Length: 61
Ligand SMILES: [Zn+2]
Image 1 (spheres, helix red, strand yellow):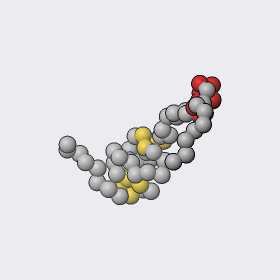
Image 2 (tube, protein in one colour):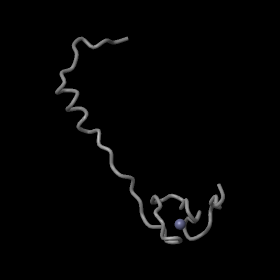
Image 3 (cartoon, protein in one colour):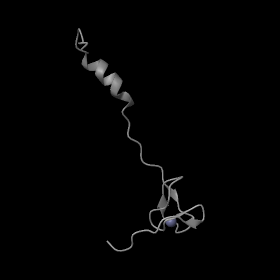
Image 4 (cartoon, helix red, strand yellow):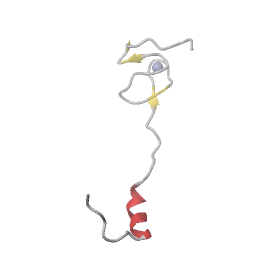
């Protein structure tokens, strides 16, 4: 197992973590029910994709 010879400085670790950015999930409006839906995904509210019902959404839980 390779072992690091020296520990990284705080600045070096912080510089690497500058790329740790969370971005909000991209959501677009569903053309069927006008709810929010991920692009290129089946709508979870109405189960429609590309103008037809692909899955039946769970109504009772
Ligand atoms: Zn929908």
